[in-house]
Image (cartoon, rainbow, N blue to C red; front, side, top):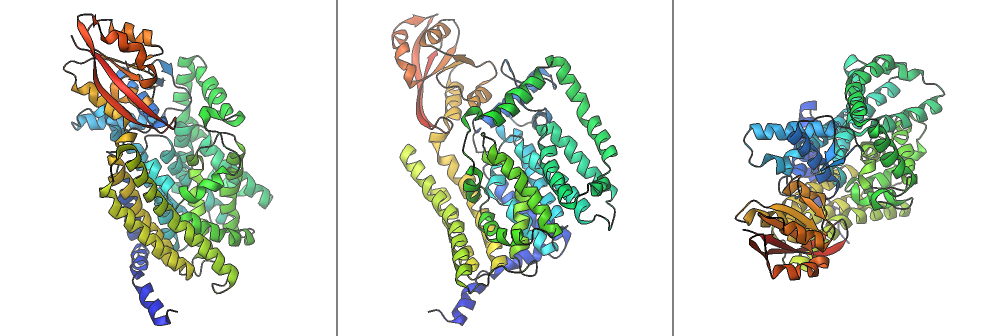
Length: 578
């Protein structure tokens, strides 16, 4: 049995975690600097090296690329197909980033996926800083820094910061709006909202509509309605000056909305509302269906490292649900969570906008002085709960590290040596986090969890993923095109991922049969066709004879794993190079 002195010595080894937190708590400037440092440590590694991640990311990026190619900043298209499922805001932001890259001389800027990710990076940074601002309504500076750090380093936000989609910007807009709503609720009857808060609230709503349609009003409206029912009055919402806000929202949103409805002849409304929103409500859109309870199950991975602390804090939050702070956070989380659990279409990032509230709830419930402890650390129920939470903290880095090594060896017969050191370090820090949690040193445990994520995310995205060639199918196919002595017309048979369109070009032809592939190769000039192994037999006869002055030859082969279909792919590149 360890002596108390040994326990103190072991605990002192990790006191630096509390020192880091104390630095952030000294001033708002220190707090923002610490949050930004944590974010950049998690968000920047892999931003450039990560290949376009099918399917949503390259769909957004390709539509933006076509905006730049055509100069049409109103209509959204993926190749010849109208893409009216989402509003235009993310495409404008991406187009600005790519145009800036071109102006600065970035080579091949329009096929450099990292440029399209800049709005997501900025959105994730803004979401983290705004979560600190929102937390200051409920917590002192130290607790607000801790809550923001848990949110900033959660795996879901780290992932969305690396993807050229809408969700990081949506999280920033929702967090800004909820910070304003929180001030209206907590300060009701005691002080008025300043103009900056009101303006930020409505600007977040307006920009959020341009980014993802009705989602910000939904995430803000559900808790507002719940709190009005709890308070039996909606008078407190007058502090947000709704007449001014609605007018501002119309000024921001109406010009593009009118333009796209006029240009599309009403197709935008039918596609965005009928084919996208109602399709997700009525069934499993794009094979993303899952039963109720799925979000709760994946939460322990997507919100790692904060999920374990949130699970510990939830009983206390429920016990104090009638207090203003707990009522607001539960209203922020519960209605949206139940709604998305009920909708058949499920993707983990759908609940990202409620995660700042989850982090806040965890800190409010568990940090000493923020609330009473629901369990004494020495009781058997308390030890069991803390031990279970500690196991969850360790499980993710250990399991993820082992899984990545297994994938790399299975598909490519390589060991990702570069990533092993940070993955191992993350696992060791997670073990230290678990030990602190078992001993009920919760503040220290939370900061150790944050530091474990700062090691894990760069280890996975910055150092391990570049060595996983099996997952980089489209970039390897594009490299075959670039090695040819001529600039070919390109087609694909059997492999239809949007990342290939983004990397090859808008004029990539999608084929359906081997006969179409033979006709394409026979059309003259420099030609290249990527053929899935299931269709390769259709072209064997073609290789034996000359076509249009050139001979069909195999100029490359790519084998890998398609994350979307969940199956291995084997592709051959057939070319005619006259």
